[in-house]
Image 1 (spheres, rainbow over the protein chains, first blue to last red):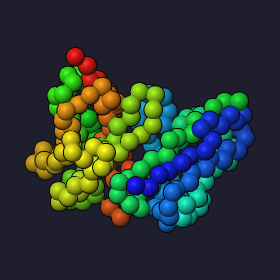
Image 2: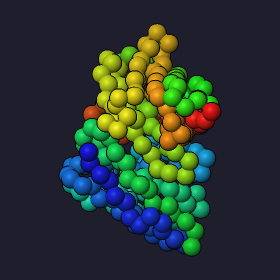
Image 3: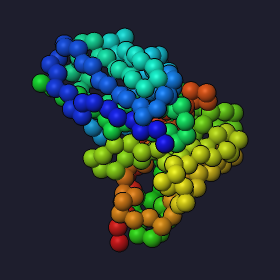
Image 4: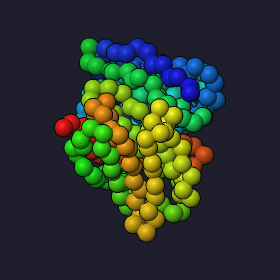
Length: 107
Length: 119
């Protein structure tokens, strides 16, 4: 199975600053990668699919980049509602696999 | 707007079978897409359990494959999860989700239901 590794585990950022989250795949997943946001007590919400395409209703401050094995989620200017846990997920191969998550917390 | 809602027993005894159902509204399961189950142990990350296509083709996580069955009931527009021989390690919030077809991202999620395995 493809192992997804996210870094850092925790990212401390001040409101208004940029956040950069990384996701690495153990083998190429092409552009078959999604990013999700999860807030406490809630289910995940799809942010990005196809490595770079924002899902419906997702603000433009969220952007995804990368292909192959290295991916990045960038939040250009953190808003209070963006403090959450973010997960990447590959769907290039079965079984589908998630990264361990990055918690974005207020600095 | 597609909506998903999990239901089932919140407490299961060790060695017994966990059964959950996901009711889908706003879209007919028989038309298309993949449908799946994902779980999240308390304080931990997400684990994909398995998925089923609209025509009944299933894919399971190898780590759970021997214990898992996912099925579709198109007449009720719902799909189900059965996980047998459960242990405390199966305690988690269980989510159902709609996946894309070519794009297998999880497009819509249910709110999740906590299942506790305890005697």
